[in-house]
Length: 490
Figure (cartoon, rainbow, N blue to C red):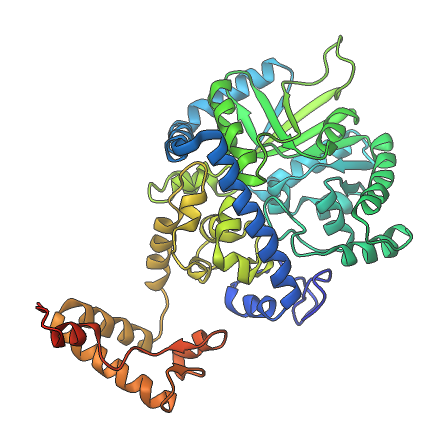
């Protein structure tokens, strides 16, 4: 396994972090399962964030957490159900405030719009705040090809960029790296002295980025929310880099998915209470910006021009499907990733998409096509931890099951279909179940060689015993023990 600082590559040298063609999560996950240091880093970070989420929500809302989540979910569902109305309202009021709005039907059009604005302004240096949508559209290579030097300014994204890596978490992009890999990158790319002290590493990055802010003629950001009643763009950050990117350069471009709409500030207030608590365990992000148009004559700072690119890229297709439109309510807090046992083991890069974890296993096939990602819906134990963690009450397990149902209609060997038929028969009758349980118990004991556990199982069961022992059923079933003690068995 390579150093996590160096992304694995395919046979022809193309990065496989965002692969072309059909993507199978299983071999990629196996690569990352073999990296013990990576496993430890991801497990520690996600466990701490998940517990922080539980603690801060309990402190803020007590026993009303589920009710609060339900209300937040209703806000997002209402917005999605009336998305056409709120988009029209937002565009009208944003343009009235001086914002120039652009509509992009797909990734290519979104990138083309941004590059055209950069060329029109003769931009040479762009400072960029964290944006999942621009990761989704692969904007940076397009800007670089157009001669625009583009620098990620979120500390995690900056480190990812200079390492030619990709984010592995929605909120914590460099969760897969440690301070040693960061120190090596700073020595190699910035000519800094080697240090593993977080404060000194942060100072090195700050000094490098401050000069970029001073010289930048273009700033690019994403957007956490769009407020329809005022035409505002809302950015939530913790490092202050978002303010530099949207205030210092003369031109600001925000690239935002159309699903980020909320009707009014009263709805925004409600969702902000949940976003930071669910993402990082904070009551509120350190910087919450509400941007309504470019700089006015009496403003001290701000861009001379503000552009917003509204990106569809498959979102209206999801909107048209009642079974999955709920997924558009995601506010990108990353709580489902932190709670998911599969994400903790497979880690983010195994998903092969900018969106990882349970939400990625749902929206990546919906955005890119299930044919390209047939195994992603399988990347879940269906334990329900993601549903319990989601601040807007998205039923991810239900959608994962629905996607599995779709993909299993298209694939599956004869042996798999026969095995599933046998399971259905066994569970359809008490008599068949007892017969199947007896055969199952007998065969496992034959393979175990008299031990109480199976350390190396044959066939399909080998996937289980690759990482853990399979405990054998007791020689006498519960029903038999109950009957021997005089209990009635139906």
